[in-house]
Length: 209
Image (cartoon, rainbow, N blue to C red):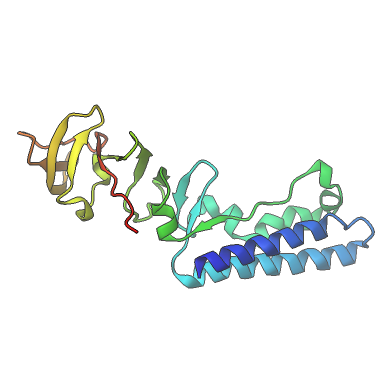
């Protein structure tokens, strides 16, 4: 379903882009009506993703946001994105002098988790498997200790340098007067990991066929 939405969105936007390239001969009224029709199409695409309930926004920097994140409004709100062009139609006619507002890059949870690396926005804080997933040594998944979840229990970890620290057995975050007290316990370590920024890694499961 998500793949179909993505294909339909890409096709619609390509058609709109090719159409907008040929706007020189239109009157202001005709051009405005065409722009409004295009905005309605883009809004329908965005709303389809939102209605699915499985929607995240991927920024050009590889950061993952919730659709309602204020920093993504410029992409999610298609009327706001196109407002400067409706006020100045020459920006639309002069294709070589400007670029049209980009559509948001929308992904499902599964598509985000399939990425080799991503960071989550600290402002909207989407609840994904990692807050900072990085591509580590080939065959390994590298992440910060603060991104560990219950799904990681039972996995055997190593530090980023390669030394084994054993199986993850416990994670806890306690709010204290001094701030958050983080602890991740591994059966190969005498003392818990208390710095959530510590990088740890585990072998990435190979896909089964």
